Image (cartoon, rainbow, N blue to C red; front, side, top):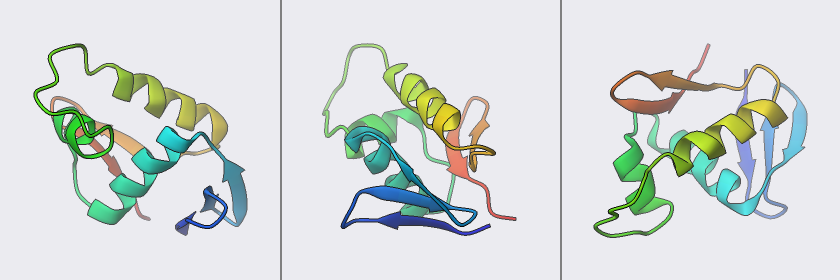
Length: 90
């Protein structure tokens, strides 16, 4: 399975298919691919949303992940309970 982000047209390529997603979904997916490890919600809020000392709910990450999973069949984003999210590579 190949996971690619196309910066020019802001699309995700996965299993030979291109997917249009929102700007923040794109930034989130790109961050996960570029880091190739488990990434916490707090890090995503800080690095993707650029919030420092975010006091509110970080469930916005969960909502964006859920939307990406609906748009991309067999989405490669996996949840590591109590730790965060990562991209799975087969």
